Every structure is written in C-alpha cells, then in structure tokens.
Length: 106
Ligand code: FES
Image (cartoon, rainbow, N blue to C red; front, side, top):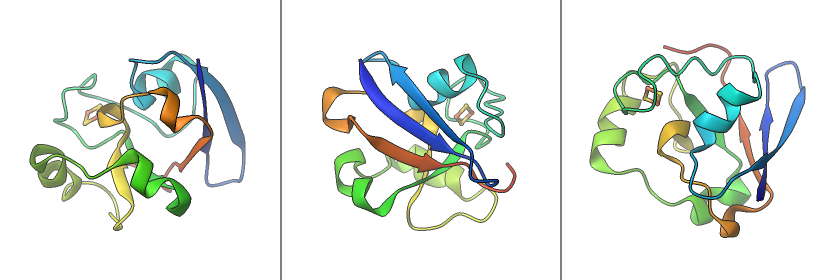
C-alpha cells in the first residue's frame, strides 16, 4: 500500500491507502473524493480527473505522456503541475504523494 492524499478546494484532506498498480483516479473514486468525475473511466479521454501535483512530488510523478498532455488542454485551468489522475500509476516511490483537486473539472 502507498499513502496518497487528495486535498479539495475547501482544504479537506483525503488520506488514502492506495494499492500499488492502481491509478490515483481509481482511488479517488473508490473513496468518494469530491471533484474527481472521471467520466471516461480512465481512458485518458475526458480530462475530468484533473489534479494539481504538489510541487515536491513533480519529479517522482514524472512527465505526462503526449496523449495526456493533449487532453490536459481540455482541463479547467491547467498549470505546469497539472496531471490527469487516471494516468498516475501508484507505486511505492509515491508514498506520501499529495495532489489538489481543482475548483472544478472541464
Ligand atoms: Fe477520463 Fe482520466 S478519467 S481522462
């Protein structure tokens, strides 16, 4: 298990024990994190699972693939630390990861 945290716009924190190999999005949905809609179910085709990765975790999370980068153009107010949470694969190196849910999805 890897601990990850979603922070919502009202400052609520959702600390989740995430199974390695799952995606951050799957864990958000399973734990009812508000604001992660994930309309396409993880196919990198909707941009409604958008999150902002905490600066300290940018390197560990890594760069988005070109397909994800294209989809991020459709996200609400994308920033340099934007990622689609369905494309963040949970692994032990991400233990402690913090991401913030945007004000709204696309
Ligand atoms: Fe649709 Fe992530 S769930 S892009």
